[in-house]
Image (cartoon, rainbow, N blue to C red; front, top):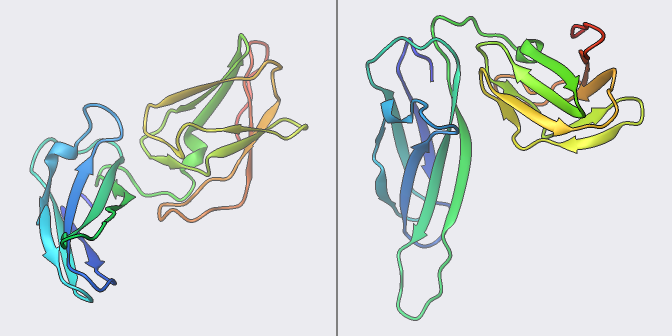
Length: 200
């Protein structure tokens, strides 16, 4: 969603052979974010077999956005029960990006990452105003030992810490662009108490 347009849509198709109730929601990925400003219609709707439903999203008026936001848009298909038939709900969650008009778009948001190592902890901080999306595994140093990230993103201002005993000179990440497609691997230098380094 672009703040200038304040609206977007997502089309859902029932590819099955039975009608479903579709329950759609938008939720924050961190406490206090802007999900409350998203109007979603219809939140619950019936979709018959081979039919589609367009889900509309609109951004309420409010304070101008100062940074990118990423929310979780979920879609849960609830089968309309038939007698003596077991059913299973199917739920999918996708990233919903909201782009403010005050922040120019970039494809290399990873350049906003600051990495430091101190007291056996590697800290990764997003010091910019863009959401940094990346594959949820990073390689540490020449040994290429891997760390699994808690999330495949860092929201603006977010910090993540991971235990890494020996101070690495660099880490390798696989960033993603604005649309969630993987970009080539990038080496980022790590700052320690004794040296100052920058990404390249």
